[in-house]
Image 1 (cartoon, rainbow, N blue to C red):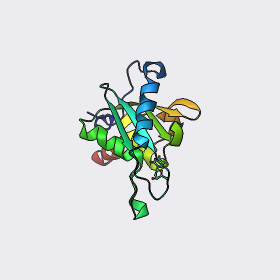
Image 2 (tube, protein in one colour):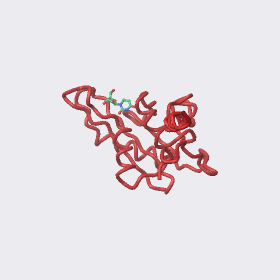
Image 3 (tube, protein in one colour):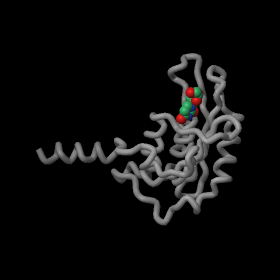
Image 4 (cartoon, helix red, strand yellow):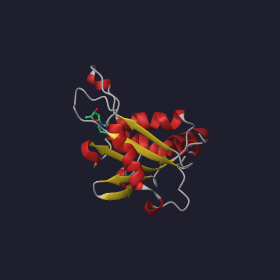
Length: 154
Ligand code: THU
């Protein structure tokens, strides 16, 4: 079950930045750089995420001659997560060339919010931060639920 299924992504019980093996996550993200298909931008991106069941999921960017349909690395990681059985992301490391920490684009922050929720941790250039600080006042599944509830009481 994902956090989205419950309407509001759940908190991670007892989860903290210290519980996460960031070196392993970063290593997996860096390994994905070699898989990136980025002939147009020349800007490879790799990402890895720790799932609440202990699995590690990963992705790389996949560009396209039709520039606008290129896929960010996070898209691949989220597909890996869902295709592999789902779950809630606890921690994510996204890197550019040489393993430099990279901030996810706006769209991908939304993806991470959906599948990680507010307490999912992200390795940023300013240290480890929770998603609630990366995407404040986020739109999410709870907004759809609230809207449906309002409709039901009309
Ligand atoms: N890119 C990602 O893979 N993730 C992000 O969060 C930011 C941007 C990719 C898309 C494109 O292939 C390349 O980086 C340059 O924008």
